[in-house]
Image: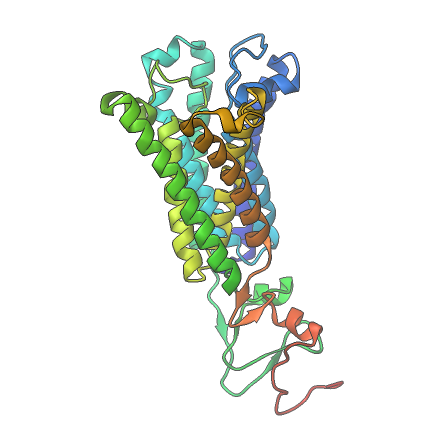
Length: 357
């Protein structure tokens, strides 16, 4: 979908507001710890990190901050701005929703002050409202394509690029040098489908293993949160978070298989979360010297370390592959202008050539 200028600005403002909210909490924790590295250690499972008061954020907050900054920029400049806003809104709702009951629980009151918990609850409501606003902005701000009359050719933004009779461009496209939103290319689609599907399978397999290890009743705590689950103030229950990543990965994988436009921004979000969760695991492995003695570890621990390595690799490849410009109507590169300038493709000349043709 192509967004109007007003929708693009609104989406960027909403992303900026979300970034300020989560950035404020991260900044609060940075002023609480003795050194910034202590906050990273806390995010990666070292609960003994030195701090003057209980810490509130998790690694997912840093990942969300990166999502909001990237989507805010994309909202102003990218052809996939609409899909990017929806992806940011969906991941915000999915990650922040458990905060409604976690922050209201009695056991959370034993871990922090009532003032800090109330502030976190207000921020959770604000984040959920802004997430809904992103989705509404993307849906309401769509600009309908303007069809060209059959048999006519309209100049694009360069002398060498023209739009054929079956192409559709918008007024915003002329202004921003872009055509309709682009989906992933054929090769990237296959690669993204395999990586996203495999990552979803790995995460789901570990959740099933955990469920059989700790039992059904205790396993529910990983979705609902409880005093038996280690969670900071803004934390998301680990089982819930894993289910969210699995669901988003499967949706993005299905979209990539059919070259859907939304698969690019959604796949990038999933790739970022895979890189973050895998990186957290690698940090744990390095800290406990699991990599150096991988061959001596029990089979379960070996598979766990290998899963972390796979998540890091899959996340990096997805960010690189899906971050490239996609294709539309069989033209790689995303715009007619880029194709015409490269000399690899040009539309047929119009019946009345313009000056300089």
